[in-house]
Every structure is written in structure tokens, then in C-alpha cells.
Length: 386
Image 1 (cartoon, rainbow, N blue to C red):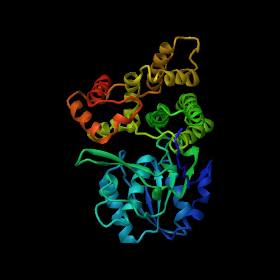
Image 2 (image 1 turned 120 degrees about the vertical axis):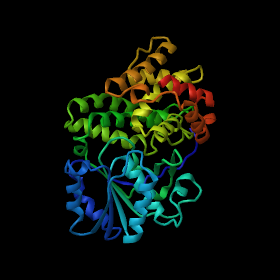
Image 3 (image 1 turned 90 degrees about the vertical axis):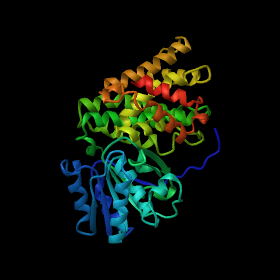
């Protein structure tokens, strides 16, 4: 395990009706609030009303709705414009990872005079950000407890991530009952996203039994509870455990001491940039094929651990049989919860495979991952997904 610095400043309010503490937290930062959200589902399921009950009497609230899945830089620009025009003090993001990520970029862009895309690409450094609070409506990205964000630029056909300690949410509100109305595919895609976050850190060479033990517990949890939540959407136990699992998967707890780039996310970002597909679905399709590509003598032991400790595969089987069965179980699980497991099912053919592989290789660091991947390897992984 390598040296690390752990930083986690977000205050978590977890459980039913914790939204009642929202106004006291917002008061710490000012009176003018920008409330951000997505396509409008929060106005149908009562979450919008619950948030406004906390805010409308005490604060001046401005709104930016319509933030897209795979949030676009144009939404960030619109948010920055509103914040500057109305002299916003604090942002309250109500939604999933897309809304939270866009809000992080808006918070940082407020203090940057040029195009906020510069902050995403790293051309400019984030030096200050508006305070951000989040109200989570989907278990997926874990963006409610980290400084990460991913933004798409359709004109450039790029989907890039950035990190800054300055955009960590000050407080996040996690009410499992807010997940009851999620469509089945969003529950499934959220689980795939959660599992991928764990996989990206778990399948690294560093020996870190505490981090890996936590990772395995998260994986077992989502594997157990996702089918329950799909069959019984109002099951609070299932929703609670899925919500907390997604937060724990990407709040750096499984990553500390195990540095290194991520493979599947780098490849999926190109899929989303080119075809605007659901992030978790893309990850689910890519992950088993990536596993098949990187399974070798060097990674065998880790796959054996994964097979035995997560899937309960008989330890007396041959190591290669355990590893291969673990990959098959991963594929079968994603398929069982309703995720289409080929790109062809999403209407994606081989036309742009080479172009995507080239872009993924250019934007990623595949020579520093568990097993080094060439541009041709990436192309073959995409083709295996067709």
C-alpha cells in the first residue's frame, strides 16, 4: 500500500426525512440559492416540493432545470451565467450524478472569467468555488461525497473528468425513499456504476486488505440488494443499502493507497461522448470484456479473490476456473437485472470503433493500469462488446 492523504469534508445526512435539515445547512452560506436539477422527474415524485418547502420561505431561489444525463458544458455555462447575474451564494443540486457534476463545474466556473471548459480540460486551475449542497435521487456515482465530476462537450466529442477539493459538497442529503420511483433501468445502471467504481480500484496490484475487504463488502451488498429493489421498489432496506454502497464506492475509501488510472471509465467516456448512452449501461457492457482481456498470470490471484470472496465460488476449484467463472457471473448478473449486454442492442455498430479506441487511448493512461493496454487492445474490447 502506498502513502496517501485522505480528505473527506462532506457532512452526510442519511435517512428518511433528513431533508428537514437542509435550510439550516444552506443558511451557513447565504440567502441566494441556485437549485439545479434534471429532466423534471423530481416534480412528479414529490422531491421538488420537499426541497422547496425547506427553501422558499427563507431564501431567494433561482432554478436551472433540464441538466442532461452525461451533463453538457452548455448547461454549465448557463448555470455560471445565472450565478453571476443573480449573485448566487450557494448551489443546491437535486438529482443524480449528472446534476451534481454539472453543479460542481458551475460552482468552479463562477470564479473563472473565461470558458469553464478550460477547468474541465485542465487548461486552467480551479482556485475557488461556490459552496455546494446535494440532495441525492439515485444511487450511482457517489458524486455526493467527492470532488470528482465528468462533463461532456458534444462539439468536441469529448467527455472529460476533473477533480478538485474545492468542489466537495459541504453537505449531502441521502433519503433512501427518494429512490422508490426510479425506473428499473436506472436502478440497474446505478448498480453497474457503483460496481465499476469498486472494480477500478480493486483490480490493482497494491496489497491493501482493508480497502479490498471494504470493496468486496460493497460488491456483495449491491449484488444482494439490487434484485430486491427491482422486484420491490419501495423496499427501504434495499434502497438504503444501495444508496450507501454507491456513496462508499467513490468517497476514496476503497482507493486510498492504491493509486492509478481507470480503464473501463476511460473507454466508456468515449462511448458516451460519441453516442450519449447511459453511463452505467456502457460500463456494464465493457466490464466483463475488459476482465477477459486483463486476466493473466499476473492478475489471476486478484480474480480468484474476487470469485471466492464476492461470488462465493468454491475455493477448491482450479484458480483459472474460479477466475473465469467470476467473469461469467459478473456478465450474467448485469444481464439478470435488465441491462442490455451488447452495444448492438443500443444501436451501436463498428463504424466508429477505431476512432473511439484512438480517443480513449489518447485521453487515458492505459500503460499504467493493472495490465497495460494498447490502442489495439482497446479496439478489440470495443469489438467484443458489439
